[in-house]
Amino acid sequence: MRNYVVIGGSSGIGKELVKILTLKGKVFATYYQNEVKETSENIEYQQYDVLKDTFDLSILPEEIHGFVYCPGSINLKPFHRFKEEDFTNDYNFQVVGAIKLIQQLLPRLKQSGDSSIVLFSTVAVQTGFNFHSQVSASKGAIEGLTRSLAAEFSPKIRVNAIAPSLTNTSLAGKLLNTPEKVEAQAKLNPMKRVGEAKDIAATAAFLLSSKSSWITGQILHVDGGFSTIK
Image 1: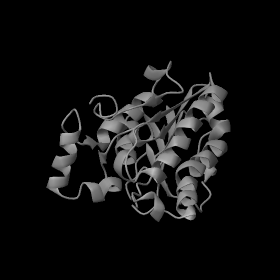
Image 2: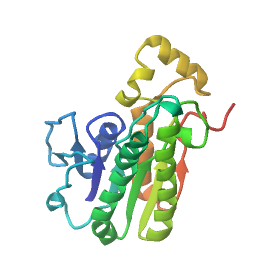
Image 3: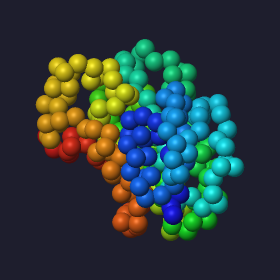
């Protein structure tokens, strides 16, 4: 049985991914505010604040086959209104939080001899958008981290990132909180719909599986063609 750690597995993309992975193996997931009371032999949750808490490694097996870091933020406003600490706090949340956990789990990921790390970027890194300076700065760092770790950890550990466009999760709630906003965003996408959490989770599950055994160091754009089709 394969063992997976999913940080932020109680909502959005993380929640959908946990559903998929529990069909294939054992999942150790975390929640922050969205408490999960569901228990089964294939899923174990712990509360975890990526900025403050220490992850409980004692509950994990010696081999981890997949690690996914789902926490993210979308803080949009003009550049001149951001404070220096806004960028620092966001970097700590989206980048340092992932780095800390990868370092802690690295011996277990190496032990399996065939493991995969999946991180999350955004289409905004490669496509300039107004008011996206904070999120683009942090996720740009994630893309650089992905490629560097893929080189350093190969061939035993694969490292990839997924870069979605706007996806219908609570994280994007302010942008999709009316039918009119959803329709407007759908019209901007070549596929004429907004992405769903299950679209992104399915790709993450693929990257964790043996079917993607020759894919590493990649930034996969799961965005309905938004980044390439005009």
